[in-house]
Every structure is written in C-alpha cells, then in structure tokens.
Length: 248
Ligand SMILES: C[S@@+](CC[C@H](N)C(=O)[O-])C[C@H]1O[C@@H](n2cnc3c(N)ncnc32)[C@H](O)[C@@H]1O
Image (cartoon, rainbow, N blue to C red; front, side, top):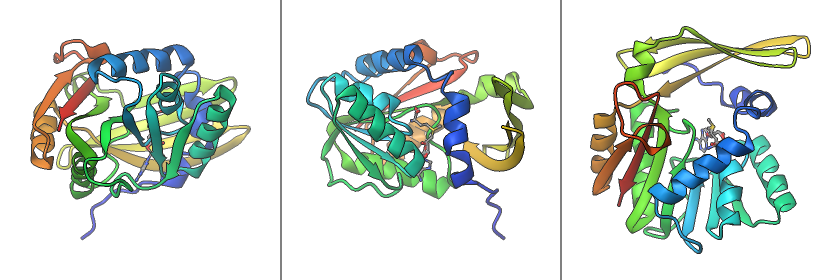
C-alpha cells in the first residue's frame, strides 16, 4: 500500500508562494542569512557553491554578489525565471538550472559548498530524502560543507499550532497542520484566498531531530555534523529553527 501523502508541487511553489512569502523573505532577512552562511561555512570569493532548491534566487544572487561561483538548482520554473531576472537586474552571474535535488548534475567532488535554505529539505519519503544527502556528499570535495535549516521538531511539537496564516493586503494563505508521528512528517493543507478565488493544496515535510541529522549525514558519507539554533546560536529544546552543517 502506498502511504505517501499528497504533495502538490506545482501548486505549492508558484507565484502565490512568492506573493505571500516575499514580505517575510525580505532583503534584511536574506542579508542576515547570507551573513550567517558566510560565517558558518567559511565561504570565500571564488568558491564553487550550489544553492540547492534555490527558489527565487534570493540567496544565490547574494552569494554571487560576494564573489562566489554559484549554481542555483530548483524544480520550479516560475521561481527560476524570477531568480534569473533578479540576477540580471543586480548585475550578477548565477548558473540557474532546472533539476531535481535527488539527482545532481555535477561531477564527483566538484563543489566547495552546498546550501539548502529555509526548509528546502524533507519533501520525499525517507529513501528520497537520504538520496539528497548522498548526492550532496558525492558532489562535495573533501572538506566541503553542506548547510540546511528546518523547523526544530522539539520546539515545534511543544508549541504545536494547528493553524498558521499569512495575510497580504486582503488575501490570505492559511495552513492547517497535522503531525504523523509514524513517519516524522508534518502533513499540511494550504488554502489560498487571493483575488476572490480560493484553492486548496497539500504538502508534507519530514522534519529531522538533531541526532537524526547527525546519523543521516554520517550515513551519507559526511565526516562530521554541527548543530545550531536560529542565527547560529546553541541548539536547545526552545530553538525554533535547527541548522545543520555537515563537513565532507
Ligand atoms: C521553501 S522553498 C525554499 C527556497 C529557497 N531555498 C529560499 O530560501 O528562498 C523550497 C524550494 O524547494 C524546491 N524544490 C522542491 N522539490 C524540489 C526538487 N525535487 N528538486 C529541486 N528543488 C525542489 C521548490 O521549488 C522551492 O523553491
């Protein structure tokens, strides 16, 4: 029996996503994320960096502006078009590619860093999620580093919110959340109310605990994994975000 819950990829990562999340993913927040990446990953100009599931390029374009050789890979054409337009407007060069994070179009040991930002991990069954890490390990050179951040499961469950909403002008995005303890996934139903129209879509996210991240990264071939809370702080049970940095 296939127990995979629905994941409406095309309906989730579209222009409505950009419309509702843009105010949250503003310049200040994106700049702060890039500052943190720079520090945690010891990024340097000239490094070959992959922004894995790069979305609309807010991180990739900034890393390119700081002199990194950036590839942005994503499966959403809508997001990639916006990323390329913003890169051109900013006068930066990023190699944007349409692709699947489970099958990376790079030679073994060819990249210095991989960043996977803002809950861009956990969209598959566990074989698929592990494949993402195996691929990351394959394409990173020895000493290369991988970054990911997710909601922190412990604090998410302790402060469980069945509903989350974003409002922009008169429009609403409303998420109803459930948690499947057997698979470690949040199961989400999203309703979009925009311009007088309503639609509903579904997605899930496998959220790993800190120890799971360590195990999964080691099993994928990483030699070490460091865990942090939001902003690179110490990870505690109250941390709302979990950041992991794996070293190859
Ligand atoms: C929550 S968004 C984060 C985007 C971006 N990292 C950011 O910080 O703005 C998750 C991204 O994962 C991408 N994605 C989902 N499944 C993917 C896949 N199989 N391969 C590549 N990208 C995928 C989506 O298109 C979306 O851009």
